[in-house]
Amino acid sequence: MTVTKCCLALTLCSLVQFAKADFKQDRQAILKMAGTFKIEFTFAETVPLAEGYELKKPYKANAHEMVKVAEDTSERIVLQHLLVVEDFSGPSVIKHWAQIWQYEDPRSLNFVGNKTWEVRDHSPEETKGTWTQFVTQVDDSPRYKARGHWVHDGNASAWTSAISTRPLPRRDYTKRKDYDLLVVTNCHMITPEGWVHAQDNRKLVTRDGQRKFLCVEKGLNHYRRVPKDKTPEIFAEADAYWKKTHHFWKDVRNSWLEVIAKSDKPISYARSIDGKRLGSLMGDFVDQIEEEEAKIPRADIDALISRFLR
Image (cartoon, rainbow, N blue to C red; front, side, top):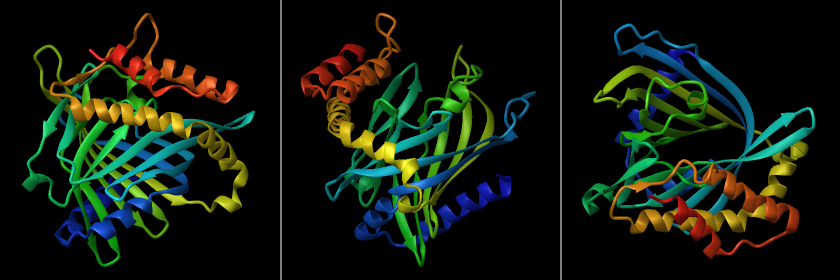
């Protein structure tokens, strides 16, 4: 990825904001992000903001992903990403992030660190015509939630978020400890070959009384549509996994949505309890479903999440 390409994607997202939004077109744009894709992930630190900071090498990766329409109730659309990883034993599936789109949603989330998100409520005037995008972690716990407008101009459709904050991405938190959160503007733009997710990121340090930015980072994730019937062996595992587990993940998702909707204080949960993480315990439920065809009661899911809430 070049800096020019990232800047161009974000500029295009800004240009279409002058067009009039339309609810039906908004829905069509969101639904166009479903399908089977080959993805190119690219991130590059572009501008140092802290004295003496040295820009890190760009990050690049490729993958295949199936994006399922997990729910569509007109004003709420849920897109579930299923990452397909190929190794020596063949394709395997990782339940990846989900996008939960909600029309004229008055509530967003602001990540403040230490597994904690502040709840932000917005007036009817602020939310009119907007969509929130709530992005979840692999276990459906919160990652970020921001509001923005879909706008349509000629053949261009794009959604641009308000500034939001989020935890470190996987590409960094397994390797770096020098910053605490990302401050982000997101853009999703529909393209003839699929869609792109462009990100304008700043890496922020908030520890020990500090508030300083390390650098600016540009991200461009390019989703190029791959006809499912041409590569059935890649996506068959994802189909099978989702068929077995989608009812369970719907209950998990709805449990978290209720927590967020009802909360009148910051939402925070423990990293681990008795040495086990929430994601690992959710994985145990999934193993029961896949190996024993078990049905996990919603009450058990609610109880597990409640154990971790602080």
